[in-house]
Image (cartoon, rainbow over all chains, first blue to last red; front, side):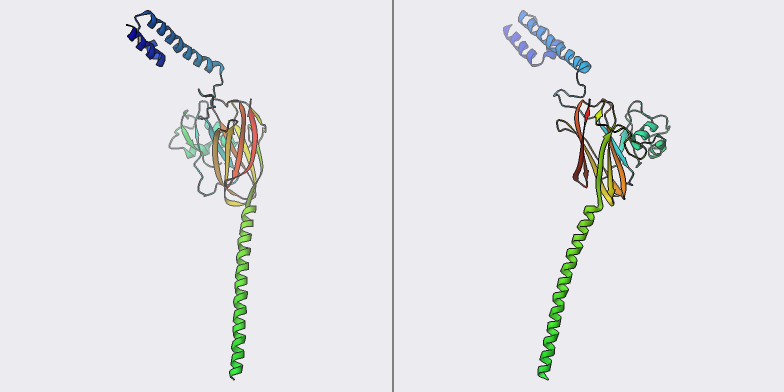
Length: 141
Length: 152
């Protein structure tokens, strides 16, 4: 019995959530262990929720800022050169976007939306209907 | 007759030698001038004259709302002004956070001619973490200007 409890305690300390979900102790020392495990488990969950609600959402678990969803673009009054190293600029649609909004942001002029539409005719059938997550090619402004 | 031939030969030899020396000298000078002028042309071809950051631009690519204090939801623009011509100039914007993390890096190859304005912008749908940032501009791979700003 003691050996079982020791094993369970070891398992609980190693993986509290497993104990909370799967192991059912039958002795007093193990019940203490389960209580601790549940406490750790729910403390972790609640800390995560609190962090989401009140913490700096832009930082990951290690406290480093997360820039994985950054979108970038650019345009110039100068024409694009044929040099190497250039890239096809793209834009990923987010909720609330429209072609004119994207044109305003990318070219500073909402009325240039047809350029984006023409450059993406293979992806856009209706210019009034674009979807979050769609990756659009951006022609030079 | 023999003496006349010797003198003529000596004169011809001297003339040939002089021409060779002058010719070599001329060639060397031309190469130096050529190399020098080519280098000078490249150095003066295109240069960055201004870099500013803000939250909106107009149709002419210039900032309409210049600031260095941003909100987490802002689109952040860096506007680069260049002068000079280069048919294949590479402008690059490198955005970094206060801890040194590279936020984004993008480039544009432009055919610069005269006064041009090039804008770079970044957005973050989930909001910018508060803190200090920097945008550094590189022209043909060389850092030429930078600007600090803050998200509050």
